[in-house]
Image (cartoon, rainbow, N blue to C red):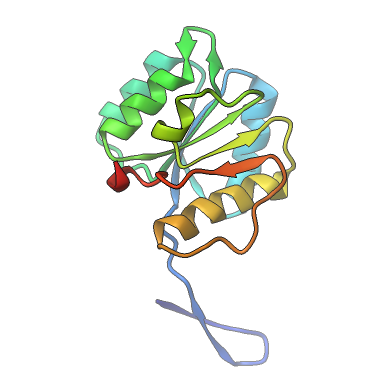
Length: 156
């Protein structure tokens, strides 16, 4: 647990995050750019932003530490479900970010956030997944977000 000193000089314990490094898989450039911006501002590290299944699988295979994959379902060269399967096989959590959550999501992902979503909802959805990884119930679920019970890769 890190320590932060507040304005009043009081020490606050800073909770260590379980989710820090993200892979964003999105083929709509404006959505990808907005997600990168929001996540970076929220102190997440973007390992890569890609728009194709093949590129996402290559990043997952590349050995970089990734805590969570945010993946759209409909991609130019295939389905985000393929990316989710590859991530799951490597023990990496997945959140679908899509207009229509696929039926396989329950087995493959920690959650599903419906598009369009607000910036706060994206951060809150990641927080809910993080709470689930810690074995705690999330404080709240944002609108349009479904958290799955089998969301952590270790639960499979």
